[in-house]
Amino acid sequence: GSESPIQFGQINPNIASNFINTLHQDLVLSFPPGFPPSCSPSVPLPFTMSHGTTTLAFIFQGGVIAAADTRSSCNGLVACPASQKILPVHSHLVGTTSGTSADCALWKRILARELRLYQLRHGRRLSTAGAAKLLAHMLHPFKGTELCVAATLCGWDGGERPSLYYVCSDGTRLQGELFSVGSGSPYAYSVLDGGVRWGLTVEEATSLARQAVYRATHRDAYSGNCVDVYHITSKGWARRDREDAEFKSQHP
Amino acid sequence: MFATQVHGDNGKMKEYHYTGPVEHRFSPYSFNGGTVLAVAGEDFAIVASDTRLSEGYSIHSRDSPKCYKLTDTTVIGCSGFHGDCLTLTKIIDARLKMYKHSNNKSMTSGAIAAMLSTILYGRRFFPYYVYNIIGGLDEEGRGAVYSFDPVGSYQRDTYKAGGSASAMLQPLLDNQIGFKNMEGVQHLPLSQEKALQLVKDVFISAAERDVYTGDALRICIVTKDGIKEENVPLRKD
Image (cartoon, rainbow over all chains, first blue to last red; front, side):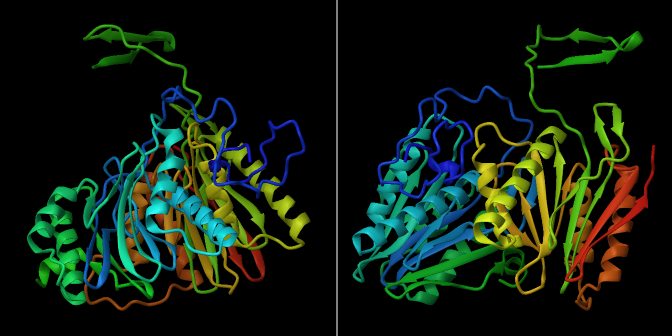
């Protein structure tokens, strides 16, 4: 395919030829000349995009825990108090999102599509490391533009082991056992660094993740509302009940 | 950096510079005001908008509603820059027709929402300056509301306000429809009559406090029997 992934296979009226079928996209994504724009936007925008968050993920003996707040803010206004910042990519891979909501939602969708195509073509699921590399390479042409995506990919590879990668739109791709991303991450790190051990039980790990996000929402203005927790094991991802962070503050 | 601009006589702008010259760039965007609101019930959806089209201190039109009918079960409300609203609705209509011709059925509300998200993101680097809210019935006949940001981030809600008075209306809806921030209140399901009255009251309040909202209110009520429209006058000042 010779068109950018953010066109989502839509018909571009500027293409002279009758190129309608856009479903044959290789893993090597190529773009038409002039896209993405190599300079910063020449059009000053009259609005801001949604930003600000606390997300975290860590590995322990029971798999991977991913947690995030649910506040989506726009300058000073809370655009959505109940947004989903942890998006399942497939049955054994979950991604936390931080940055601009639209960028994160759409790029996760593009990643899910490419992973599904890989699975259909090669007969096996791509590993978390492979998914992280794929996402990093897809975002690379947009480096220098205003795209802002900082995600952690939490997955279970090939029935054997948990895996955690951090991918960012400025090109960073890191493997690790503990990550926290977003404006509230310093506060979450302080709680996690004091409590994360390999030997935690599932209940302890879930409760620690909730505590970390709750502490961050308490101090960071751009994080708040509820806490989402996901747990990834060899059987796939499972979502825990969403809990109100304010509720926790009154009933510690 | 401050540059205070004051209107002198005959409408010409005077400029008092406190810290030197300020660069003015041509902006392809303009803000035309207006507020949109959508509420989803058990078996209905309501999409309402005011009908004032403004720019700066002027009112271009008092009869420019911001709700557009897409299918028999879906209505979209678009507020922001009117030029982009018109083009976006034209593109959505064209895509609906294409879908109908290739798939031999109408698009569902959820499908329209997902499609709109990709249309908006396709212009990530020169966005449509439009705040969209889709209201309609889902495949099971239940009310559905989908709210968007200008670049395509969306989710399904029970109620949402968008446009110039959204920051004033949303907390009120959180309280009255979502029963938030109250204790010891019975969570009754919202009936169509109650929802309609709430929408009218809420817009009357918005017209009092927001200069860009007023003139008239256009309400589209989506049920399994089709789409009904109602017009209610608002403050014209």
